Amino acid sequence: MIAMPSVWIACLTLAQLPSTSTRLDARTNILLGSVLVLLGVAYFVGRALRRQPESTANPAVVRTFNLRVRAWWMMFAILIAGLLMGYVATVVLFGLISFWALREFITMTPTRRGDHRTLFWTFVVFTPLQYVLVGLREYGLYTVMIPVYASLFIPARIAIAGDPKRFLERVAKIQAGLLICVYCLSHAPAILSLELTTGSPEARWIIGQDAQRQPIYGSNASVLFFFVLIVQLNDVFQYLWSQLLGKRIIAPQINASRTWEGLIGGTLSTMLLGMLLSWATPFGMFWAGLISGAVALAGFAGSMTMSGIKRDRGVKDYGTLVSGHAGVLDRIDSLCFAAPVFFHLTRFFFSKL
Amino acid sequence: MNLTAPFLAAIAKLLSGATVRWHECQPDTCQRVYFANHTSHLDALVLWASLPGEIRNLTRPVAAKDYWSKTRLRRYMAQCFHAILIDREEIKVHQSPVDVMIREIGKTYSLIVFPEGRRNPGEEMEEFKSGLYYLSKKRPDLELVPVYIDNLNRVLPRGEFLPVPLLSCITIGPPIWLEPNESKAEFLKRAREAVRRLKDV
Image 1 (tube, rainbow over the protein chains, first blue to last red):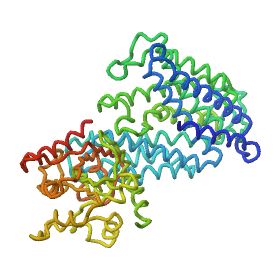
Image 2: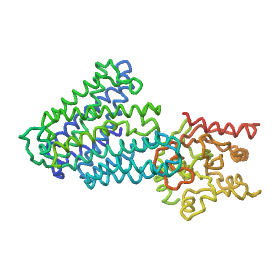
Image 3: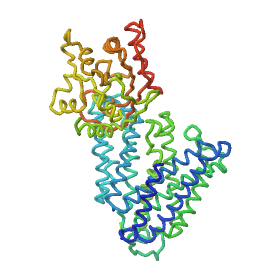
Image 4: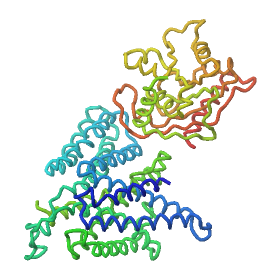
């Protein structure tokens, strides 16, 4: 029932769009509108499925579906709120999501008493600092702060704490958490800071000589929305193709529901969807398809990696780890892996560097 | 009742990310003794904060005087959540901690106690101190409610003063009572087992 308030928030914000917002252009509004309709349909389908007898609809599948739809409403509401309030607000909201995901990640991975101060640095210094740098649009700093400086600081701080037991393992856990939950995800709001063009001069050798360098204004919001939509629907496509044709499971011990058929079918479907939605981006149909393919593969890699970590720890969902929590990390695993890929492709080929 | 108490409770809940599970037990304003495993200074505060508001106002944690009266901030916080401060160093004959507790709670308040007596650094719970037994012997009408606190020792371990905001979980289990003719050792073992069992539910 959490969905209902967010429906109203979404309706209210959409109703106000033409008068209050100059940042969201027509393309974004069309994209948002169609997603809203889709989500509405998904919501009512979910409700109808819940009333079906158990013989026609598997209750576990229906439950998962409804949880997903609820998470999408939340994501949608957060994105809309962020986009309407501006760049800094979006960065702050993504920062909070990162913070919560990192909380789940570290809670699940066992750390030792000697890691306490290092964890304090991770939560209180590195996580906010990364988002402050993204907020300040300091590309040169936010791309190296965590992979270089935090990654060097963490082992040094653990060494100073003086506990040598399983040293490398403990370092890797904290580094991986910070990299996936904070560093990767922070590239999603950073999309809003790009100065988009129809093709960067550096990319001319690959896009073609006649590529123009016309700046596009006001469309960053629709590009960010395009990205989140592609990643989420890619998850759905991979699941559906797995259910339809899936025979060859990729890694049964890691994730028993991911199949090669699902991966290939899902990626192709996502590429097709990306091409169909290319009007919301500066990419053009061909490049929208290719970038969507890359995003689909990265999203798949994210889900597989997180499954691997979960199996190692013997939990099914991050949500069930501490029961009652929503399991933010379960919902954003593919988003985390895909964000830097999408960001860098867009930045290199379609922005003023 | 002051205004800082709900504020303090909200901060504690936010910081510890505590999930509260009532397992075969319902929130109630009747007189109870919540007894829990003890791993962090935050235990009393977070357990107290995770009770529903009306019950929280009627529940008083039992805390160590030497820790909670050390600085002005700690004294103020202890006052906020109506802590009963027990002197661990100096135990007087006519003022035994159990007598103090029974006198302080009267016919209205509930208690939060940590029968291990001190924060436990290890994985396994320590043996329970006998206070819980005498409490129950003198006031057999009190419901003894076991509570298992998970992961708070990682939020604020022994000897640290800056908390790391991880997620923790508080499981509140079905009440037990002192059986007639039950010996002290048997009862304490059973009580400890009641807390330990909540780890797996």
